[in-house]
Image (cartoon, rainbow, N blue to C red; front, side, top):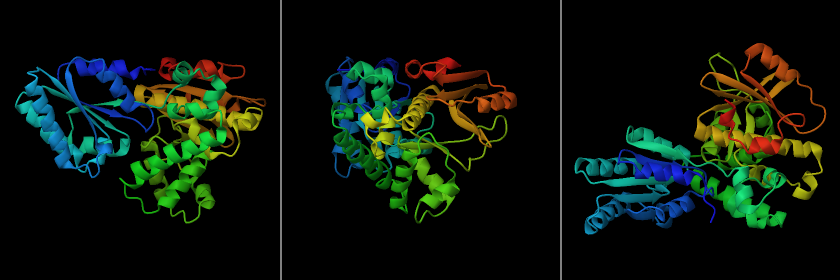
Length: 394
């Protein structure tokens, strides 16, 4: 059974003295539950694992009951410490208030129960953390699977990763592309939108949100103004609504909109986001073109390559705490701009002919970045870039 590297980091935290609630965040289908299952097999302390996803109408009473069960199990075993793990915590209404109450009770009574909470909606989890649990938690983000992980677990080559992305649950289906696309659409995309967004967040126009995701996925790696986007969507409302829906999609690990880099100027939300999926499977599943056809189509393949580089950047950005932007002035563009601790890196992707580095030259003259990096033909090979953690560039 393949183990993601995250497991050792979380194990180390759990083995430390009781200090913080560990909150594991990440999109659906990235292996959070599997990691916890593997982790529980490695520890020597007693534990209780429960999932709110398996309980209909999970509520405060249910959470109180399992917490009390953890205390009883610990007492019955005469243990010095115990671990309580609750999966899909965001499904419980007002979960953060009760977690605070129970955690503080254990702290006051010197009961050494360590707690791990898992959730698939970053938006709802963060809201609960900031409202009630300030100073009591650490977050532990698990992103989508990287190319090295998919290669190690499923023996994929880089072209397969660029097209099929990084959902391990879909790996067995890539021999039948239509079946694979249906699985990604029905079991991944629809589940996230229906269960993690529409059921848990107030959305006035669900059809618009779904259409925004479809269009944004097809435009992954491209800049599209909200004004033009409204023209593509029927009953689009206003740019504020679209921006809010894009935030919801981003917090659920589906689709984000990169902002334009502005240097030291105070940044405002860009009127023209650069769409970027979090997993290239979302791009390929929404597009009609098949794997055998896209690898021989330079224009299409170039877009997939750039989008794949983008997924690699934004997933690592969440764990390594750096910012990802794009830059454009007139017709000149830099594909990605990375920023961390005052250091800036300009990144250009070259996947075909006709590359003219005018955008990079203008960006260099205007912002004087610490590094200018070309990925693809004539620069660092795409496969090599996908094999490194981008934070190493700083």
